[in-house]
Length: 331
Image 1: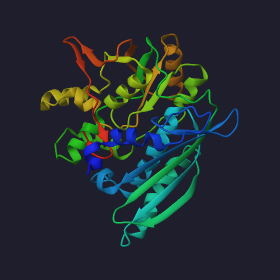
Image 2: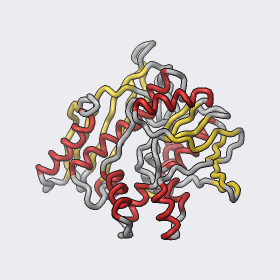
Image 3: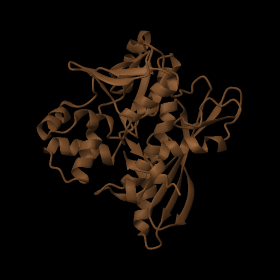
Image 4: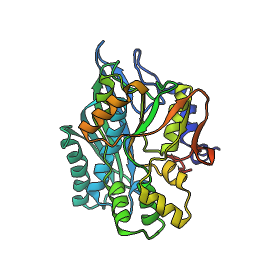
């Protein structure tokens, strides 16, 4: 019998596609970041669910509150990518019977407080017992059908941009999992990113109001997978002409003889937004980003072919479709 780990997450999703029922009038397909349900002609409920498992997701040194907080980020980031306005969150908390009560409460506190700082109430949820710590976050939001931003809307000539620099979580994994030593400032920045990721909740919605975004995704599975997904679903290609990484990581990779592109493209867990912007709207998008204190970076453009490549002074290099797989962990 074929095992899920052998098949992989994306092949499994393709296998169950026929079992999924998309509501009439929905904008988002089965393979988008979130799902939407029309509740009136002008309003759709946008829903996302994400799961955090201690065995695979709990990093060494992470506190219970940080685990809860990250679960909230996981649930809300996909709503942010769709341009929805979050209404509320819920949490399913499953823990072993001998789990410390104070730690369980800290998980819920971390989850709740992340939403409250953006006026998103935590409504409660469910509790249960299992052999591991399993946290399932649900985020609920609303948007008009015209406001919802799919993965599939990129057009040839659009600018490809991201809301931050990549590679810090890759450094954190090197430090926490592989025991690699890095200089103190980079060490601090990497762990802060891994333990306390941030998302830009209202940025895509603000861009959509002026027609300054055509497609968007969050990058939690890795920038490389995200770029490939946008390209495939939009029927186009992507050329990256500037890797979005901090100079300190570039230097670190050269010194340690690490693959820079892999650190940037296959890190995952950054929760940064990847979006496509019509070129005539890019200056307006930059103005909005400045007002909202979002670090918007142009990294490339949408092309007519179906390739996803990094172009530098040495030529073009294919960006692999590789990153996080929920059935295999890291490809």
